[in-house]
Structure formats: structure tokens, C-alpha cells
Amino acid sequence: MGTEPVDYCREIETYLCRKNDGHLIRITGPSFELVTAWATRGVPLKVAFSGIDRYFERYYAKGPRRRPVRIDFCEADVLDTFDEWRRATGLTASLEDRSADGDTATPHRGSSLPVHLERVLRRLTSARASGTLDAEFDDLLDRVSQEFDAARRVRGAKRQALVERLAALDRELLDAVRARLDDADRAALVLEAGEELAGFRAAMTPEAFARARDAAVDRLVRERAGSPVVAYW
Image 1 (cartoon, rainbow, N blue to C red):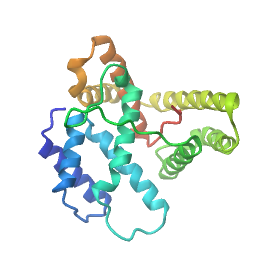
Image 2 (image 1 turned 180 degrees about the vertical axis):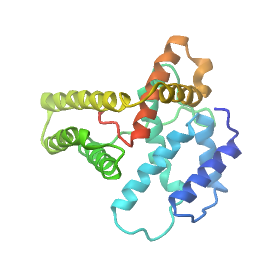
Image 3 (image 1 turned 90 degrees about the vertical axis):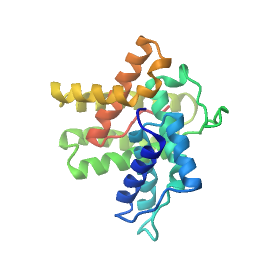
């Protein structure tokens, strides 16, 4: 990853401080070991940040905060986000997920379909309100909202059809956001995606790395627009 564990922890600590409105919670002792394990496993910093963001989204949704968040509370969200990133980039097919002591890590179960869509709607609504997504995306937001209502009731073949529709909506959203990038933006995102995957490159074939880099670029495009992954795995 090109980042020493102590520097990685410092970056996480700084990010958590910003999320806590400037309240500094030191990452020491067991918390330091926890975050160091993320670095050892290859969790990219921005992926870890996204996991922290996910925890804070739920925290804010519960109402006014009462105390600063400790990094330990974000552990499950960081690892879930890392799992999603690895699936999206294809890394799960070619790499074993090892913990710091070398044992195979326990996989994390993803969110239920209704919970996933609730998070998607929250992110889309926030992006629309902040202006990172403009009125062009209102129709897509409405369609995601309709699928959210359906997700509470569907089973079996209908559920699979819903999952396929979500994949199509996800591609539509991504293509629309990509179309707004200029050549310089695209080149910068490709470079950043390569840096994000640097810790895994030696274990990948050139073809696998190219596919993973394309998927990492997609994630960065979404991040820039503030748009979530609509597809459900």
C-alpha cells in the first residue's frame, strides 16, 4: 500500500477527528492493533474512510450525537466496505483474505436488500440536496425509491428480477456520472485507482489488475459524485 502502519493509523486518526467535529480520540492500545490489522490486510485508506462514513451515516440518522465515536465502533462497517470493494474489483477470486496473524478471516455478511436500498436512498437524497447530483438524476432517484418499496415484499424469482433491475440502474447512474468527466479527470482517477491497488498488484496477472483498476475507477467516480452503489450483491 506504500503506507507504514503507524502512518496509516495517523491518517485514520485524523479522519476520525474531522468526523467527530474536531474532537480527537487517540488510536492507541487495542484500537491501534485493530487499525494496524486493516493496514496489514491491505484495506486502502479511502475504503476505510468510506466504512467510517457508513457508521456515521447511521449514527446521525439516530438523532443528535451524545459522545465522540471511537474507531472500534466502525470496525464492522470498515470490513464490510472492504469486502464490497474486493468483490467489486474481483480480488476475492484471486486472493485469500488473511488477518494479521495469518489465519483466514471470517467473511462479513452484507446488508439485507431493504437495508441496502434504504442506505442507497439516503445517499442519493443527500447528494441531490448538496448539488453533487443535479435535477437530471431525479428520475433515477424516483425509480430507486419505487424499488425500495418493492424490496419489502418480493421473494424468489421476483427478488432476483429486482436485483437485476438494481444492477441496470447502477450502470445507468455510473455512466451518467462518468459522462461528466473530462480527460484530465479520468487520467487522475486511473492513477489513483492504481495506487489504491498497489498492495495487491504483485499477486495479480496484468489482466486481473486491469479489471480491478477499472472497477476501482468506478468506485472513485461514485465517490466524487457522492453516489452510492445501487447494485446489490
